[in-house]
Image (cartoon, rainbow over the protein chains, first blue to last red):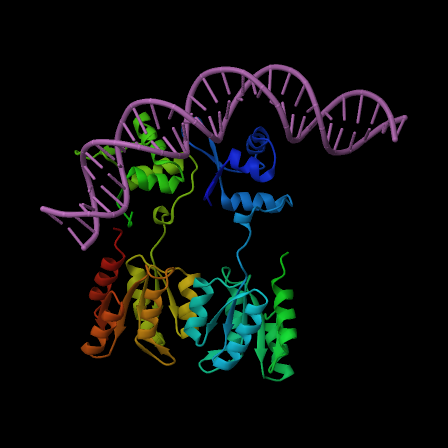
Length: 189
Length: 189
DNA sequence: GCTGAAATTGTCACAATTGTCGCGTTTGAC
DNA sequence: GTCAAACGCGACAATTGTGACAATTTCAGC
């Protein structure tokens, strides 16, 4: 198996703790979709399809298919604020990365693939509302949770929520409240 | 592998997630057709044949074999320049998209997955050299071709090349020269 | 709760396919 | 030219697909 990109019927059998014969029947029945090697038609299932199959049936995920450590992209040009956020989030087990300008923010959405971003609404050269709208309008980023952290007034925070932010925290923020919000937003289904 | 026109048995083995020995057996059995190097008969499979083979067996295609229109991300805040670039590139069969600020530039690297970007070095709030360095330092973007299009002097263009740009065009650019450069940089190896 | 039919899953043996290992040779980057 | 990495091949081990049949689970009807 060795962190494979594809799984054989035997691999799936071990993962599902089921007889290999049964896995083959699932495949024949079309409940688990794979492809066949040219030789005698040995089955292979991609990890994506196996993941969907397990999810669909509420089956436990093997370690190698479990989503990796949660990642948070911190968008803030104030180094001290960014460091404070990092400290809190790392302590509760998140991987973090900081973007301090518009380009990095955008580029890291794709390269870092965060589960959540903390967003400062008022950065020079970057309109936070625009960021929210862009993320919500693009298929590949839509799933990213957005936690606005801003010193702006409630009216603006409300506007951010309407634009698509998942939650807002006033600045300065309370560490415990930050941790709670991030946990709540990234809770596994 | 390095985006080859032909694949060795080991390349195919990695792509199919199968043992190299098995690939050689497929070739011996005539299920996968290739040719042999004169030396000891090392196998080579053309990308066309590999494509057919994978299709025939319902196997997943690696990114480099997925047929896709070439995409160019045009990074320029001057609408007229961007439109001019779009017109030329579309006419020669490229799909294009425009980014007019730093955030969009970064975000579209991941969401639009361009094969090439045309980059204006002097945009307000976006340091072109920084963009080049960032792209070259990130695994997920490193493969993107960078064509700098700028009105800056030759010394700056040389600096851009040293930072990692693949080619430079002075502004204003000649349409034919632009088309030639883009074609050359995105030619299928 | 119990029963019994239907559907699903497990077991087993066999032949075919695929994986592993080692060695000597060839490639390809420097 | 030099040298590490990749390759082909043979022999053998491990895994796979299949069919037939047994065991288990599911579930409606009582």
